[in-house]
Amino acid sequence: MTSAVLLRRLLPHRRARTLPSPAAPGELVAKAVGLRVALGGRAVLDGVGIGVRAGEVLALVGPNGAGKSTLLAALAADLAPSAGEVRIGGRPAGDWSAGELALRRAVLPQAAALTFPFPVAEVVRMGRAPWAGTEREDEDEAAVAAAMAATEVEAFAGRPFSALSGGERARVALARVLAQRTGLLLLDEPTAALDLRHQELVLRVCRERAAAGDAVVVVLHDLGLAAAHADRVAVLHGGRIEAAGPPSEVFDAHVLSRVYRQPVEVFPHPRTGVPLVVPVRPGPHRRPASPPLPERDNSPSLTGP
Ligand SMILES: Nc1ncnc2c1ncn2[C@@H]1O[C@H](COP(=O)(O)OP(=O)(O)OP(=O)(O)O)[C@@H](O)[C@H]1O
Ligand SMILES: [Mg+2]
Image (cartoon, rainbow, N blue to C red; front, side):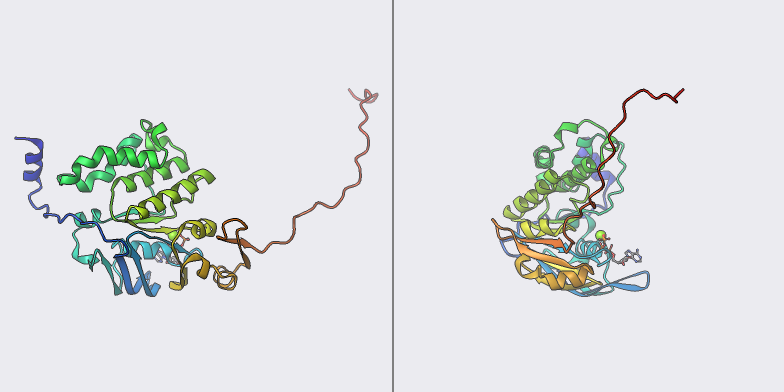
């Protein structure tokens, strides 16, 4: 008996999975309608409606506690709403089995409390688990290699995940999600721990995935990254969507200053025209001019030891 047959016998209740077909460009891949989520007896999302289409990068921004992670978890069907509905691939999210969902959406959580004692390459390979036993299992090696190259983690492929730096771990966690090769990517602050180069790299990967036809939802705190790379931005505030649309429309100084409770200025980049959002700051801090230091006396001390 082959191991595949043995596995099938051991897992007789495993539901047959319908493999996803690619979404047409612009097709709604996921949407939330009238979403309300209550946590700890309090509505942390209320009346939220948003859709994400194949081929676009949608950024979710907003202050701490605004509800970005909650919305992402609801769009992932990881969290059941108390009112409203989430649809994924044209069906109510709850209609998909866990296995079918894993073929349709991949989630990078904000606090990836992963302490895998496994080598990096194995951690990335875990992203392929949902495809085991399907015709797309053949893609495993190529998907893992491509995800590791895209996130520049090949250099530490053989090292234990637990022995990596914070930013290195974040890139490996993203590689695992990319290796899953789903049509919907839900990424919660994938750039939070990354250096300048890798922040840009990750947003370029998001753009490439969108160009290849995927729908990408990404939570960002860096409004400059969102402005430069997102097709649309949704600004969350107090569990509601305050504004949504292209960054050039949504990134308004008055709206952002109010939502973040921090005065900001917005002006176009002189070369690209992309909005730059910066906090209003006083001019450069200058030290008061100090009196000249007395000349140092290098003569041997007569009173020393
Ligand atoms: N399990 C929970 N029980 C009670 N309240 C919760 C729970 N999880 C989150 N909240 C609250 O829900 C609100 C939204 O949380 P959420 O994590 O979605 O915010 P966020 O926009 O992702 O913030 P951040 O930028 O800090 O990640 C917050 O006020 C938070 O305190
Ligand atoms: Mg969050």
